[in-house]
Length: 107
Image (cartoon, rainbow, N blue to C red; front, side):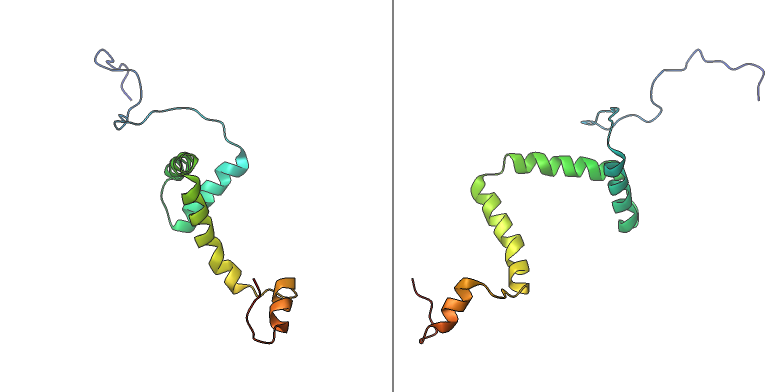
Protein backbone atom coordinates (compact mmCIF):
# COMPACT_ATOMS: atom_id res chain seq x y z
CA UNK A 1 0.00 0.00 0.00
CA UNK A 2 1.05 3.55 -0.58
CA UNK A 3 1.88 5.66 2.42
CA UNK A 4 -0.38 8.41 1.10
CA UNK A 5 -3.25 8.61 -1.43
CA UNK A 6 -4.41 11.64 -3.39
CA UNK A 7 -8.20 12.06 -3.17
CA UNK A 8 -8.40 15.60 -4.61
CA UNK A 9 -10.22 14.44 -7.78
CA UNK A 10 -12.42 11.87 -6.00
CA UNK A 11 -16.21 12.10 -5.93
CA UNK A 12 -18.55 10.88 -3.22
CA UNK A 13 -21.38 8.50 -3.95
CA UNK A 14 -22.00 5.18 -5.60
CA UNK A 15 -19.35 3.74 -7.85
CA UNK A 16 -21.88 2.37 -10.36
CA UNK A 17 -24.00 5.10 -11.96
CA UNK A 18 -27.74 4.41 -11.89
CA UNK A 19 -29.54 3.77 -15.17
CA UNK A 20 -32.05 6.43 -16.21
CA UNK A 21 -35.41 5.89 -14.51
CA UNK A 22 -34.00 3.90 -11.58
CA UNK A 23 -33.60 4.99 -7.96
CA UNK A 24 -31.43 3.54 -5.25
CA UNK A 25 -33.46 3.01 -2.05
CA UNK A 26 -33.31 1.10 1.19
CA UNK A 27 -36.35 -1.09 1.84
CA UNK A 28 -37.18 -3.45 4.68
CA UNK A 29 -38.75 -6.72 3.61
CA UNK A 30 -39.80 -9.73 5.64
CA UNK A 31 -37.18 -12.48 5.61
CA UNK A 32 -39.76 -14.87 4.14
CA UNK A 33 -40.40 -12.53 1.17
CA UNK A 34 -36.71 -12.01 0.46
CA UNK A 35 -36.02 -15.74 0.75
CA UNK A 36 -38.83 -16.51 -1.73
CA UNK A 37 -37.42 -14.15 -4.37
CA UNK A 38 -33.84 -15.36 -3.86
CA UNK A 39 -35.01 -18.99 -4.13
CA UNK A 40 -36.91 -18.14 -7.32
CA UNK A 41 -33.67 -16.79 -8.83
CA UNK A 42 -31.83 -19.99 -7.86
CA UNK A 43 -34.55 -22.18 -9.37
CA UNK A 44 -34.40 -20.14 -12.59
CA UNK A 45 -30.67 -20.76 -12.77
CA UNK A 46 -29.56 -17.23 -12.05
CA UNK A 47 -30.59 -13.64 -12.32
CA UNK A 48 -31.26 -10.86 -9.89
CA UNK A 49 -33.79 -11.08 -7.08
CA UNK A 50 -34.18 -7.30 -7.13
CA UNK A 51 -35.34 -7.49 -10.75
CA UNK A 52 -37.92 -10.13 -9.75
CA UNK A 53 -39.21 -7.88 -6.95
CA UNK A 54 -39.40 -4.95 -9.40
CA UNK A 55 -41.30 -7.11 -11.93
CA UNK A 56 -43.74 -8.29 -9.24
CA UNK A 57 -44.43 -4.68 -8.23
CA UNK A 58 -44.97 -3.68 -11.87
CA UNK A 59 -47.44 -6.53 -12.32
CA UNK A 60 -49.28 -5.59 -9.12
CA UNK A 61 -49.63 -1.97 -10.25
CA UNK A 62 -50.84 -3.08 -13.70
CA UNK A 63 -53.46 -5.35 -12.17
CA UNK A 64 -54.69 -2.59 -9.85
CA UNK A 65 -55.68 -0.62 -12.97
CA UNK A 66 -56.94 -3.66 -14.89
CA UNK A 67 -60.64 -3.39 -15.78
CA UNK A 68 -62.93 -5.82 -13.96
CA UNK A 69 -63.90 -7.54 -17.22
CA UNK A 70 -60.23 -8.28 -17.97
CA UNK A 71 -59.70 -9.63 -14.44
CA UNK A 72 -62.68 -11.98 -14.77
CA UNK A 73 -61.52 -13.21 -18.19
CA UNK A 74 -57.98 -13.82 -16.89
CA UNK A 75 -59.19 -15.71 -13.81
CA UNK A 76 -61.57 -17.86 -15.85
CA UNK A 77 -58.78 -18.71 -18.32
CA UNK A 78 -56.49 -19.66 -15.42
CA UNK A 79 -59.09 -21.70 -13.53
CA UNK A 80 -60.91 -23.59 -16.31
CA UNK A 81 -58.05 -26.01 -17.05
CA UNK A 82 -57.78 -26.80 -13.34
CA UNK A 83 -61.51 -27.38 -13.02
CA UNK A 84 -61.56 -29.66 -16.06
CA UNK A 85 -58.70 -31.72 -14.63
CA UNK A 86 -60.58 -32.43 -11.37
CA UNK A 87 -63.76 -34.54 -11.72
CA UNK A 88 -66.80 -33.34 -9.75
CA UNK A 89 -67.65 -36.29 -7.53
CA UNK A 90 -71.04 -36.16 -5.90
CA UNK A 91 -71.99 -32.73 -7.20
CA UNK A 92 -75.79 -32.26 -6.96
CA UNK A 93 -76.18 -30.71 -10.41
CA UNK A 94 -74.28 -33.61 -12.00
CA UNK A 95 -76.54 -36.10 -10.22
CA UNK A 96 -79.69 -34.34 -11.52
CA UNK A 97 -78.34 -34.26 -15.08
CA UNK A 98 -77.53 -37.95 -15.02
CA UNK A 99 -81.14 -38.79 -14.05
CA UNK A 100 -82.70 -36.95 -16.99
CA UNK A 101 -84.06 -39.43 -19.55
CA UNK A 102 -82.85 -37.40 -22.57
CA UNK A 103 -79.40 -36.77 -21.14
CA UNK A 104 -79.89 -33.01 -21.41
CA UNK A 105 -79.82 -30.64 -18.47
CA UNK A 106 -83.00 -28.76 -17.57
CA UNK A 107 -83.05 -24.98 -17.66
